[in-house]
Length: 370
Image (cartoon, rainbow, N blue to C red):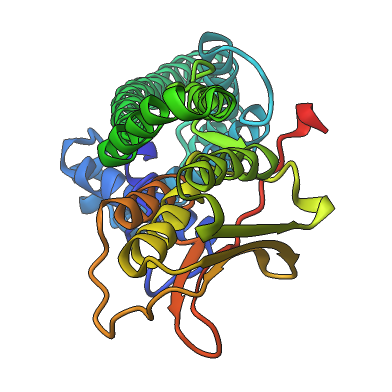
């Protein structure tokens, strides 16, 4: 009865109500069960020859269906209630077994007593005793079937949860490894050029060499990520971008200017580490280095209704019609895919001014820092 009643797909299209559908399955199961036992019943042939077959089996079917529906519904109500409690599996199954046995005896004993009386077989103490034992054993069998089935379901769910947890852990480790790889890679050409500039400045201008060395150390300290975080606050990210621009400004002196506009209420929103620096580096590379002219870079961060908007504008050459992302831009896409999946947009715009716009729709704040 319980096995069939748990098959939620039976009659799902024709009977929408779950309780009605399960009760229908219970009735059908009880009817099939009692019908299959008909030829093995001692009274079957005698009742047939005495023209009592219809009355006898109509009563038997009625009793079987009544008992099954009563036991199922009471037990189902108890199970739904126990699901909201913190009882252990053993205690829950113990309560359910007791309820099933009790319900089976409550409905089975009176109906058997009335049936014997109605069919003229008498209602003796012996028949009552047999009825009690029969319904007790039937309740035990039904309860044990349900407990066995519940235990199998619990084990299956536990193993499935373990597998899902392991898959989630492996995915987390994979994402962490990918992010660590992305964070640890600073453009080697930038490092090579910065060290060469420091070497030259050490001879001509010791103060600038010292300033550039400290800035480079700060940038690499941020890159090393000793706290093992995948995110940084916008305040930290903008500060490290400013450090990078200071290094480039020392190298190119009067050929680079920059400005930063940051809304005060966005300081502690979280973004991926090194989100801004690759965009700014591209502006320096394709603007100042490619043209040799004065490069102006403007960084603006705003808090809009649909999330954060980060804009990096410069006066360098326009973006090509078919933009092929280099390593730096691709790293931005990779980080946002891992940390803000389906919650960001990146646009490369040439008119009315050349700029890169990044919109992050999922807002996260670094609460401890506030």
